[in-house]
Image 1: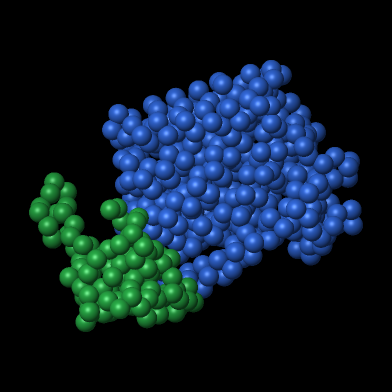
Image 2 (image 1 turned 60 degrees about the horizontal axis):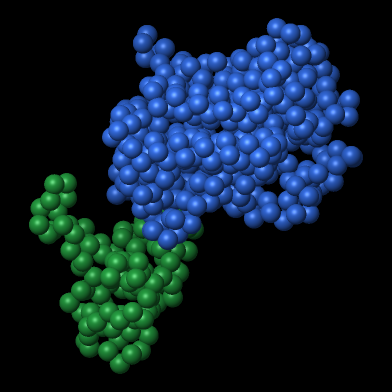
Length: 111
Length: 409
């Protein structure tokens, strides 16, 4: 599976209810040290309830400029959340299913 | 002293490098049909390109990322690819137009058909890209391009009625012979010619090529803020020359020789020779910039190693892509399509694609993770947003106006 197959696919909870679409994947560079960078590890996926379109980077930090672009994008992606890899039950070709009792984290990066 | 020389050189290069085949043709066409009543668009376009060239230069100097790397990171793979496809095709169209422009100028000088000059022009462009150092390439074409000042000189020699010209420029109105839709179509074409996206791709990648740091920003700002407006002044001189000579004679520009006509009338053979030198230098310089831009955009999107600071063997895909682009442009020209027509379409399509380039720059210039303390100030953001509205309006209006006016016919 490549990332392109994952991005934009539906996300459902354990009962099959639709939660949104995969709009991004979040990686941490903390794997085996490589020549330039360490290997990337998939931390989780960002689920956006309305659209799988890009956040243009506005999900990470609380940037409010330039008005109103930032506000519009944030409003469009309201209700988005991060689900950790541990909480993903399975990835089917049509949808990603989460485990029961999954935790929805805020999408912003903690400083 | 050395620093002062560097600044002067940078400004002169920016002036000479501002005008390309798009500016030449569009300004002459507009001058011959609308007089100087569209000069305000050049002013709006110049302020816009100053604003965004500066912003992209700052992003490149602070974060080390050129514009298409920023676009790739911000839009993600899919929207980024769509953006690349549009930007790349329009850029290819501009490459085609510039090579055609070199060939047409050489035809004007020699009387030998431009079709025979096209392969030479392509070969010369490729050799320079392959062999010549970035800074030398920039400075030589920029300085020689300054010969286009001959348009301003010609305008003085023509002894126009300055009051009438100023009246037209400052109280613009649609001339009786043209409809408002055509007026606005050419307004968009002029805007697109002044703000062509390749200028920003090239400018920001050039900043990385020359290894700019934060301390170089003052000099780059001077180059842009003085050089581009003076380049815009050359554009206005081109339009004014056409307005003074061609408009009263009822000649609307369809060939490069007609662009040169007012200069030849005012200054004779010598002026014509200087003009041809200027046109060759300006189109040659722009052919280099657009060809490099096509390599830059592709390489930056796909993550290939790029740059003239690397030996070609170290940036093989980058150089290969540019060779393919040059061949593609020449193939298009070899069908016998009129390069002037290609130019006229390329500036309008540039206007359509403007938001694709300028929105990501504006967004990233606000991101402290990239920019640290060098994020946009409030004034720059207000201006940037104002321009985004103008750019979006022009982009959305371009196709309907093109259809309604039959591409300005």
